[in-house]
Amino acid sequence: MARLFGTDGARGVANTELSCELAIKIGRAWACAQPELQAGSGVRPQVLVGMDTRASSPMLANALAAGLNSVGVDAVMAGVVPTPAVAHLIPLWGCQGGAMVSASHNPCEFNGIKLFSRLGTKLPDELEETIEGIILDETEPPPVVIGGRVGRCLAGEAAVPDYLRHLRATVPATLSAKLREQGVRRLALDCSNGSASVTAPRLFSDLGFAYDLLSAAPDGENINAHCGSTHMEQLQTYVRGNEDISVGFAFDGDADRLLAVDENGGLVDGDQIMAICAKAWKAEGRLKRDCAVVTVMTNLGFHEFCGRCGIAREITAVGDRYVLEAMLAGGCNLGGEQSGHIIFSDFAATGDGQLTALQLLEVMRKSGRPLSALAAEMERFPQVMINVKVSNLGKLRCHTDPEIQLATRRAEAELGEAGRVLVRVSGTEPLIRVMLEGRNEEIIRRLAQELAEVIEERLI
Image (cartoon, rainbow, N blue to C red; front, side, top):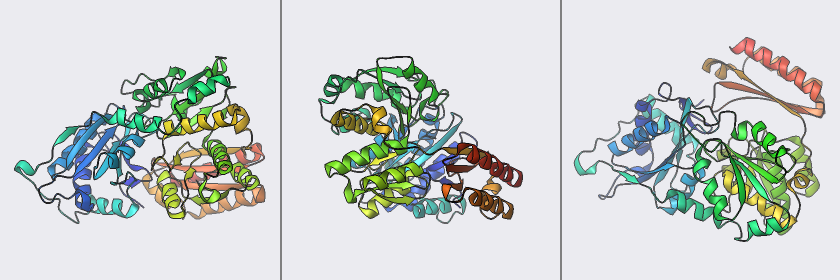
């Protein structure tokens, strides 16, 4: 199991588990492990550094930059931007890598560091393990540079406008006008008091949309606090109380996820968004290999929907990095997660909440149908998820503990072919996630609670 990096970067409570000292070490070790970041011929490599709106993000971004500078790498400081902006701008600006300081959907006290290659893709597991070895096992001493060879911090002032230019180019300039003709009046945008707060208002204004803003006043502490894609109740209530709102969009803290709300306030999750887009793209001949890449968490209803529509599926482990790897290996251009990480690889190398919103609006424009009608085509099977907080040792023992294995088999036997059981270790938090799915919600809720109690008793 990884010691520093989970499924989405290195994470922990900022200033304790993820300290400035560790951020410096990550910057230095990264430059040792990745050949493109090693200075040569008098040219300093450049790394783009972005961050979200947490109080701790500037502190950790500056510490990471200091680590990079100390081994001769320039840090291009983009300020507050979405994670997908960093991924997009790395190759556009000719940087040799990029980093995003963010803990995504986690509460404000957490933070994280996500590392990207020169192509804007997340680093492979093998490279992250090499970085871990340099930091924890001191397998390779970072170089010492002095004088003019020390890296600089540079201002990446064009980050937001360059990123927004890219997003606008993915849809027709007439999108908002055409949707108005079809009765789409206003949007509601829940920015989660995160990175979307600095980009979503400009993006949707530039495209001519009327919108209401929710949770777009970050103060360093309120990121993801009862808002955004992990707390959809706020947006659903708002849409139900405002008849002129036709669609609601909720981003997470670093804006790489999107969940939607239809005109009636109904939730439209990542599986349904993928289903809507996959069907539309297949009909247009745009869905490569007529296939979507999804994870083990994807709802059974999505698979049933795709079976009816003649859409193949490839299944990966949880994490948008694994989805992208499978997409690239298999030549697919659509994939994602139920949580709202949707990858449209024709346009981006990572999940992008604002890009997903635009693609969903474009399907609505072409179909002439409201979001509720599009989403209703996929039946969402009941799912029950229980997060069990455990120790780090407990995470290691989860899949080998005999009592947990026995309890899991009992639940699977009771469900039979009418559902499924998934127990997995979180890659970003000290949690074991227990997920049961089936047609009978009462049964799966009972079985999930029984299994969670066994896990808590054995691993706490």
